[in-house]
Length: 365
Ligand code: GTP
Ligand code: MN
Ligand code: MN
View 1 (cartoon, rainbow, N blue to C red):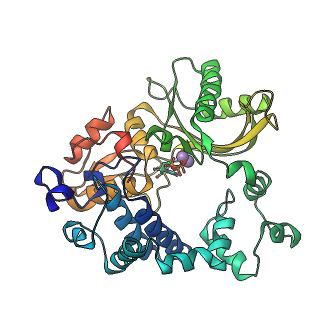
View 2: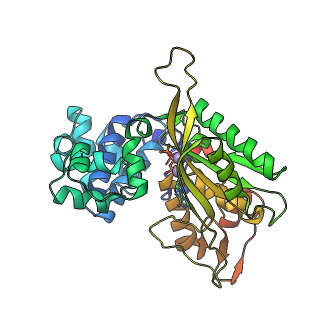
């Protein structure tokens, strides 16, 4: 059995970035249970506990087959006592009582409802919950103070919580590509995020813009966004300027969070429906992230924006703990040699880190 769990006689590697994690795996009921608890821990502000459940789930996703018995967990890294109990319950009864309780709890359900609003994080949702708010109607009727972003999120709540299909992501990408061509021929638009990992649907469309000549990309985004806006394609947007390189030296970029400093635009597109004449309505609101990277940083941006979130977190943790390097979406810095390690492809970044290359489809950790 152990041989089955560890193909080629190898133990499962401790970091998710050392493993291949396909989109589809054989332990869905177990990972769903663990991820529910991870989400709930996140809602309560227990980041450490949340991460522990996420890690356990991620290990199970990398198993080549179904986990049949609890004893098989012995050879796996990063599965704590609590996760073990959850796994045992699901294996024995098909469900875990604790997870079922969480899913039914008023707090979990309300937090889920609120955090699904574009622009609402755990802190805001938690405050609203404490104030006694429970429904989207409550938010409107009690005149809760909302940012412009949250207002847009609420207005398009239904659409934005309907999965984006791959065909919709591709037509979004084409629309952006056409706009980009008008202002900067030769610039490229790359679909990143979950779609690049092979997901058939997602919660948004992540697009990376660059130009093969360093510096030519400056100013592109605002022109593209203005033009798309003038064509009636944009329902909401807020942009952020590039702030990288304003300070000297490498920055870990806030450890826990993944925010980077690229010029970018968080937006909601008005996408023409592809349903044809029978479609109930002519358009659909779709969340789109546009990010501009200078070509020298593009491989780092691509690696950083392809995800999964957990895979990225593990890459950075591996870099810092095992290699004394700082990795972010802009660069890789070696603190032992005090130098930046440039790369022209994702493969080179893995090489610098001394990691076997993991293709996007295997980064679903
Ligand atoms: P869905 O969109 O839910 O289908 O999945 P996804 O994996 O595409 O998630 P998401 O769009 O939230 O993020 C895509 C990738 O971009 C993830 O790996 C994130 O870690 C990364 N990402 C998201 N926001 C930021 C950010 O502000 N900075 C950086 N560097 N990365 C980010
Ligand atoms: Mn995405
Ligand atoms: Mn995104």
